[in-house]
Image 1 (cartoon, rainbow, N blue to C red):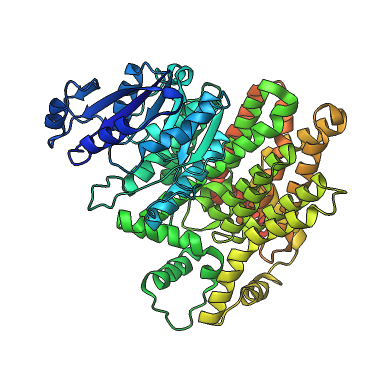
Image 2 (image 1 turned 45 degrees about the vertical axis):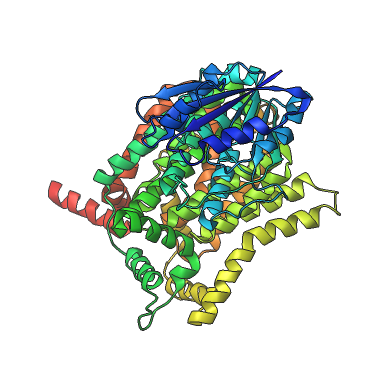
Length: 609
C-alpha cells in the first residue's frame, strides 16, 4: 500500500528541504510506501531553485507560473495522487510527519474514511497558539459544525488524511483556490466516516513566516456558508433565500433608510462611553446592561469601516440574514417530518413573511439593537427543536448558549430559555435524576455570563437591571388608556394580511389534528407560543416588542401554507403583506389611531357636503 503526501508550497525556501527530509525519515506502519507530491504555487523566493536541486529524488513536482492559492495547489496535488491513502502536509514545519502513524490506524483498520489531525484535542507537546487565532479557530470550527453536523475540534487544521475512495469522490468537486479549501473539504467529507486524532503542533510566529490573518477568517466564514449551503443541490433554496435577503436589505435601505432617531441616540452615547471610557454626567448605562456585545460588535466593525453608522448597518444586515436563514431551517425541519419534500415552499414563504415583517424592516434594519435579540431567539428555537427531535446533548447546550449570547444583544433572547427548559421537561419526564443536571447546565450557560456583566455594571455605575425595569414601568406602566386595545392594534397591524393564514392554520389543526402534527411538534409549538406570550409582561406595547411572538404565529401559518393547494393565493397575500410593511408608517398605523380615523371621516363628509 502507498501513502500519497501532498505538499503545497509558496515561498518556503527555509523549510522545504527539512520537511521533505522529515517525511523521508518516517517509518510508516504496515510498511506503507510513500509518494511525495510537491506543488510550487508560483514562489518568488528560491523555492524553485531548491526544487531543481532536489530533482531526481523521486518526487512529483507541479509548478504554477503564478500564485493561484493553496486551494488550487491542493486540488492539483490530489489529482496527481495515486496512493491508497492521501494526506495533506504543509511545508512550514508546524506539523510533524511522525504523526502520520497516529492518523493511519483508523483508516487501515477500516473504521474511518477520513482522519483529521487536531491541535486542540491532544496532550502531546505543542506550541501555544496566538489567543485571537485560537478564539477565531474555535468560532470557525463551531460555525462549521453547525452546518456539517460534525463535532470537530479543529476544522482549520492542515492535517487531513483520507482514503483513495474519498479522494476520488471529492477531487473533481473541489473549487476553492485559496484558504477556502479547508471548509470545502470538510463540507464534502462530512457524509463519510470522519475520525479525529490529536497531533503535535509547532506553530510559527508572524516573524517566522506565518501568513494567515483576519481576512482569511472572513474568507473562511464565507466558505463555510458557500460550501455547506449554496453548493448543496438540495439546498439551492437556501442560496435563493440568501440572495433574496440581501436584496431585501438593499431595497429596504432606499425605501426605509435607517435614521438616527429615538433610541439610536442613547446607543450612540453608550458606544462612545465604551469606546473612550469617559462617562458623561447623568449617564444611565441601561444600554450597556442590555446590548453590551451588540454595541461592541458595531465598534469592532467600525474600526474596519471608519464609520460607526456604516458598521451598524453591516452588523444588523448580517444578523438579519442569519436570523432569517435559521428561521427557514427551523420551518423546514418543523414541516418536513410530516410533509416530506413539499416542506420547501411553505418554509420559504414562512421565512419571507418573517423577513419582510414591518418590525423587521423598519426597526430591525434601522439604528436599533432589537434584531440581535430576535436573531438569537431564533437560533435558540432552532437548536431547541433539534433537541426535541433528537434529544442530543449538544442541542440543548447550544440552545442555552444562544440565549446566553443573545442576552448581550437584547433581552428578547431570554424567551428562548422558556422553550429549551420546557423541551427538557418534556423529553426527560420521569427521568428525575438526569433532569436537574440538564436544567443546571442550560441555566448556567444562559445566565451566568450576563449576571457577571450585571454585577460589573452595578459595581462601576451603581445601576442595576431593576433600575432599568423601574424606569420602563414608570414610563409605560400607565401610558395606555386601554392596554387590551393597544395590543389589538399593534398585533393586528403587525401581521396584517398574514392573519388570514394564521386562521387557516388553526382550521387545519382542528380539522386534521394528528394527521398533520405529532407530539413533538405540538409540544414545541406550545412552548414557542408560551415564550411569545411573555412579551405581554413588558410595560411598553410596541410592534418591535410584540414581534417576538411572530415566530409562533408563522409556525401556525406555515401549516396553512403547507396544506392549502393554491399557491397563487399565498403569493398574493405575501404581496399585500409586503405592501403593508412599506406603507405602515404612512397609512396603516395612522388608521389605528381612533381620533385620526374619525377626523379623516369628518373631513371627507365635510368635503362631500
